[in-house]
Structures are given as C-alpha cells and as structure tokens.
Length: 271
Image (cartoon, rainbow, N blue to C red; front, side, top):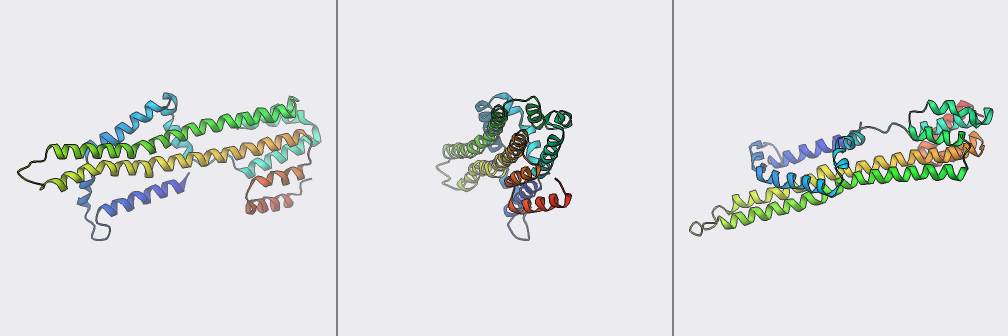
C-alpha cells in the first residue's frame, strides 16, 4: 500500500479544513459552509472532467480506477528478488544448459520475465533478444506516460476553469449590482466568485498532481525491474558466471541495498 500518498492526502485535507475553520482553537467549523457552492463545483469539476475526456481516448479515461489501483499498491516485484531469481537461473544454465530454463519460465508470474527466458531458450540471436525486450519496455513506458499525461492535463485545466468560474461570478456580480445600494453586497458576492479558483487549485495540487507523480514513480520502478531482467537474461545467454552476474546486477540498486544483498549472497555460499 502506498502509505505516503494516503498520509499526505489525509494530512493536507485535515490541515486545510482546520485552516478554513479559524486555524487555531476554538475552531469555527460553521465557517466551512462559506466554502461550499454548487455552481462552482459544476463549473470546475464538470468542465475539467469533460475536457480531459475530450483530450484522451475513451479507453484511457475508463482506466482511471486501474490507475489508482496501480498507484496505491506496492510493486509486485522488487529488484533484489529479481536479482536472486536471475542468479538462480544462471546457475541452472551453467549446470544443465539453456534448455533447462524452459521449466523455470513456466513458473514465472511476470509475463515479461517469462518471455525473456523463452527468448534465450529458443536460441535467438543475443542482439534480437535485447532489442525485443527493450522495445517491450519502451512501449510499456509510453503507455504509462499516456496515463500520467491524463492527470497532467486535469491538473492544468482545473485551475483554468477555476478562473473561468471566478470571471463568471464577477460578471454576474457586476450585472446584478444595484446602483442605489452601492457596494453593500460586493463582499459576499466576491467570496462566492473566488470559490471556483479555490476548487481549481485544490483539484490541481491535492488530487491530480500527486497522482501523476506517483504514476511516473511506478513507471520508473517497473522500468528498472525490467532493465535488470534484460541485462541478466543477456548475461545468462552469454554464459556469464553467476557470481559476476550478481555483481553486475547489483549496480542497478542503491549502494546501501547493494551492500546488504552482497552480504546475504556471501552467506549463501553460491558458486
């Protein structure tokens, strides 16, 4: 579970609500009603959703629940488990040959890992193996970036429609101004006009922006895992020593994690 996102979102909402309710005790929660306006909700949220829908294929828009599922869940694979699996495959390949890896391919839950193993089992050219896998990674990353771009677009248009709502409110305020009463109602009417700008900023910076950032983080994590697989598979095909393979693959992870994995491998006594 993506705890950081949930904590950040909840804390931001709580702090904003308390700020609206006077900031410090005693809180005046009745003030929250000042920030509710049906017309502003329709203009900002309704128009933002409509423009995002008009800007992307329907398939991408309908995948929004999937995007949130990906963002909130932890990655299925971690670099260290992939490295251990590749080293095990390298040991099997050195003892029994590449054909012995076919059974291991069937045990893989990750389709990309399974495809990578089968490419070397089928004795494909090493350059072709690498090119095929790297093309798969590039296409996957393009799909992920398209999903993140949806939230970038929403983050851009929601403040714009917040300003549109403010302009609409100001126009209505000026049209309805009574010359005989002067400016007695300007304060109340101006506050309503500004609520749409508030809604636009909240949507952009509390909802859409963090989602786009988290999706890109998930993409970078998945790309890293797949690049480790590509490098490991091509080294196995070349007959590289399992110990040297581990050393090479450890360069993909952070130094502290690298030392931990190296120590655990040393204790396992692998050949």
